[in-house]
Length: 188
Image (cartoon, rainbow, N blue to C red):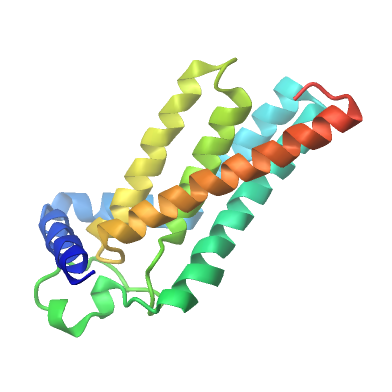
Protein backbone atom coordinates (compact mmCIF):
# COMPACT_ATOMS: atom_id res chain seq x y z
CA UNK A 1 0.00 0.00 0.00
CA UNK A 2 2.87 2.35 0.81
CA UNK A 3 4.45 1.68 -2.60
CA UNK A 4 1.14 2.40 -4.34
CA UNK A 5 0.71 5.62 -2.37
CA UNK A 6 4.26 6.73 -3.20
CA UNK A 7 3.73 5.99 -6.92
CA UNK A 8 0.41 7.86 -6.86
CA UNK A 9 2.05 10.88 -5.20
CA UNK A 10 4.97 10.89 -7.64
CA UNK A 11 2.63 10.63 -10.62
CA UNK A 12 0.47 13.42 -9.19
CA UNK A 13 3.50 15.69 -8.73
CA UNK A 14 4.69 14.97 -12.27
CA UNK A 15 1.27 15.69 -13.80
CA UNK A 16 0.54 18.69 -11.59
CA UNK A 17 3.86 20.26 -12.54
CA UNK A 18 3.05 20.03 -16.26
CA UNK A 19 1.44 23.44 -16.06
CA UNK A 20 1.61 26.62 -18.07
CA UNK A 21 0.39 29.98 -16.79
CA UNK A 22 -1.78 30.49 -19.88
CA UNK A 23 -3.47 27.15 -19.18
CA UNK A 24 -4.43 27.95 -15.58
CA UNK A 25 -7.62 29.92 -16.36
CA UNK A 26 -8.69 27.30 -18.91
CA UNK A 27 -8.28 24.46 -16.41
CA UNK A 28 -10.11 26.45 -13.74
CA UNK A 29 -13.00 26.91 -16.16
CA UNK A 30 -12.99 23.21 -17.10
CA UNK A 31 -12.98 22.09 -13.47
CA UNK A 32 -15.80 24.39 -12.34
CA UNK A 33 -19.14 22.57 -12.27
CA UNK A 34 -21.22 25.54 -13.40
CA UNK A 35 -19.25 25.77 -16.63
CA UNK A 36 -21.08 22.72 -17.93
CA UNK A 37 -24.66 23.74 -17.13
CA UNK A 38 -25.30 24.89 -20.74
CA UNK A 39 -24.07 21.49 -21.97
CA UNK A 40 -26.44 19.66 -19.60
CA UNK A 41 -29.39 21.85 -20.57
CA UNK A 42 -28.64 21.39 -24.29
CA UNK A 43 -28.39 17.63 -23.76
CA UNK A 44 -31.79 17.46 -22.05
CA UNK A 45 -33.36 19.63 -24.76
CA UNK A 46 -31.85 17.48 -27.51
CA UNK A 47 -33.00 14.25 -25.84
CA UNK A 48 -36.52 15.68 -25.45
CA UNK A 49 -36.57 16.79 -29.08
CA UNK A 50 -35.15 13.55 -30.44
CA UNK A 51 -36.85 10.97 -28.21
CA UNK A 52 -40.00 12.77 -26.99
CA UNK A 53 -41.58 10.79 -24.13
CA UNK A 54 -38.72 8.27 -24.03
CA UNK A 55 -36.45 11.14 -23.00
CA UNK A 56 -38.10 11.23 -19.58
CA UNK A 57 -36.74 7.76 -18.75
CA UNK A 58 -33.39 8.55 -20.34
CA UNK A 59 -32.94 11.75 -18.34
CA UNK A 60 -34.03 9.99 -15.15
CA UNK A 61 -31.56 7.17 -15.85
CA UNK A 62 -28.72 9.64 -16.46
CA UNK A 63 -29.69 11.60 -13.34
CA UNK A 64 -29.74 8.41 -11.27
CA UNK A 65 -26.32 7.39 -12.60
CA UNK A 66 -24.81 10.77 -11.69
CA UNK A 67 -26.53 10.90 -8.29
CA UNK A 68 -25.39 7.37 -7.42
CA UNK A 69 -21.83 8.05 -8.57
CA UNK A 70 -21.73 11.26 -6.54
CA UNK A 71 -22.93 9.44 -3.42
CA UNK A 72 -20.47 6.61 -4.07
CA UNK A 73 -17.55 9.06 -4.19
CA UNK A 74 -18.57 11.73 -1.68
CA UNK A 75 -20.98 9.89 0.58
CA UNK A 76 -19.18 6.55 0.83
CA UNK A 77 -15.51 6.61 -0.17
CA UNK A 78 -14.40 10.03 1.10
CA UNK A 79 -15.70 9.49 4.66
CA UNK A 80 -14.54 5.88 4.62
CA UNK A 81 -10.95 6.50 3.49
CA UNK A 82 -10.32 10.01 4.90
CA UNK A 83 -7.51 10.52 2.38
CA UNK A 84 -6.40 14.15 2.30
CA UNK A 85 -6.46 15.96 -1.01
CA UNK A 86 -2.92 16.70 -2.22
CA UNK A 87 -3.56 20.43 -1.75
CA UNK A 88 -4.27 19.74 1.95
CA UNK A 89 -1.25 17.48 2.41
CA UNK A 90 1.35 19.50 4.40
CA UNK A 91 4.31 17.63 2.90
CA UNK A 92 3.24 18.63 -0.63
CA UNK A 93 2.36 22.29 -0.06
CA UNK A 94 5.60 23.65 -1.54
CA UNK A 95 5.75 21.07 -4.35
CA UNK A 96 2.40 21.57 -6.04
CA UNK A 97 0.96 24.15 -8.39
CA UNK A 98 -2.42 25.11 -6.89
CA UNK A 99 -4.43 27.44 -9.10
CA UNK A 100 -7.60 27.80 -7.02
CA UNK A 101 -9.08 27.11 -3.59
CA UNK A 102 -8.53 23.52 -2.58
CA UNK A 103 -12.06 22.43 -1.70
CA UNK A 104 -13.09 19.82 0.84
CA UNK A 105 -10.56 18.10 3.06
CA UNK A 106 -10.78 14.61 1.57
CA UNK A 107 -10.31 13.53 -2.01
CA UNK A 108 -10.66 9.77 -2.48
CA UNK A 109 -12.54 9.38 -4.78
CA UNK A 110 -13.05 12.28 -7.17
CA UNK A 111 -16.70 13.26 -7.49
CA UNK A 112 -15.89 15.21 -10.67
CA UNK A 113 -14.48 12.05 -12.25
CA UNK A 114 -17.33 9.90 -10.94
CA UNK A 115 -20.03 12.23 -12.21
CA UNK A 116 -18.56 12.97 -15.62
CA UNK A 117 -17.77 9.32 -16.31
CA UNK A 118 -21.25 8.30 -15.12
CA UNK A 119 -22.75 10.73 -17.62
CA UNK A 120 -20.39 9.67 -20.42
CA UNK A 121 -21.00 5.96 -19.85
CA UNK A 122 -24.73 6.49 -19.44
CA UNK A 123 -24.89 8.34 -22.75
CA UNK A 124 -22.79 5.66 -24.41
CA UNK A 125 -25.05 2.88 -23.15
CA UNK A 126 -28.19 4.77 -24.17
CA UNK A 127 -27.07 6.18 -27.50
CA UNK A 128 -23.73 4.67 -28.53
CA UNK A 129 -25.12 2.21 -31.07
CA UNK A 130 -27.34 4.81 -32.71
CA UNK A 131 -24.87 7.72 -32.42
CA UNK A 132 -21.26 6.43 -32.36
CA UNK A 133 -19.83 9.98 -32.00
CA UNK A 134 -21.24 9.94 -28.44
CA UNK A 135 -17.95 8.25 -27.54
CA UNK A 136 -16.35 11.71 -27.70
CA UNK A 137 -18.11 12.54 -24.44
CA UNK A 138 -15.46 10.36 -22.81
CA UNK A 139 -12.82 12.86 -23.98
CA UNK A 140 -14.75 15.53 -22.08
CA UNK A 141 -14.85 13.29 -18.99
CA UNK A 142 -11.09 12.68 -19.19
CA UNK A 143 -10.43 16.40 -19.58
CA UNK A 144 -12.57 17.28 -16.55
CA UNK A 145 -10.91 14.50 -14.54
CA UNK A 146 -7.40 15.63 -15.54
CA UNK A 147 -8.29 19.21 -14.59
CA UNK A 148 -8.68 17.99 -11.01
CA UNK A 149 -5.04 16.87 -10.96
CA UNK A 150 -3.96 20.09 -12.69
CA UNK A 151 -5.58 22.29 -10.03
CA UNK A 152 -4.06 20.18 -7.23
CA UNK A 153 -7.31 18.73 -5.90
CA UNK A 154 -6.84 15.00 -6.63
CA UNK A 155 -4.28 12.25 -6.98
CA UNK A 156 -4.46 10.02 -10.08
CA UNK A 157 -5.91 7.13 -8.03
CA UNK A 158 -8.67 9.43 -6.80
CA UNK A 159 -9.51 10.03 -10.46
CA UNK A 160 -9.37 6.36 -11.42
CA UNK A 161 -11.56 5.32 -8.49
CA UNK A 162 -14.06 8.05 -9.28
CA UNK A 163 -14.13 7.18 -12.98
CA UNK A 164 -14.54 3.48 -12.19
CA UNK A 165 -17.35 4.23 -9.76
CA UNK A 166 -19.06 6.43 -12.31
CA UNK A 167 -18.87 3.76 -15.00
CA UNK A 168 -20.20 1.16 -12.56
CA UNK A 169 -23.11 3.35 -11.44
CA UNK A 170 -24.01 4.13 -15.05
CA UNK A 171 -24.02 0.41 -15.83
CA UNK A 172 -26.27 -0.33 -12.84
CA UNK A 173 -28.61 2.56 -13.69
CA UNK A 174 -28.81 1.44 -17.30
CA UNK A 175 -29.62 -2.16 -16.28
CA UNK A 176 -32.49 -0.91 -14.08
CA UNK A 177 -33.66 1.41 -16.87
CA UNK A 178 -33.76 -1.50 -19.35
CA UNK A 179 -35.66 -3.71 -16.88
CA UNK A 180 -38.27 -1.03 -16.25
CA UNK A 181 -38.52 -0.22 -19.97
CA UNK A 182 -39.12 -3.88 -20.79
CA UNK A 183 -41.81 -4.20 -18.12
CA UNK A 184 -43.55 -1.10 -19.44
CA UNK A 185 -43.19 -2.24 -23.05
CA UNK A 186 -41.04 0.76 -23.96
CA UNK A 187 -38.19 0.42 -26.45
CA UNK A 188 -35.06 1.18 -24.45
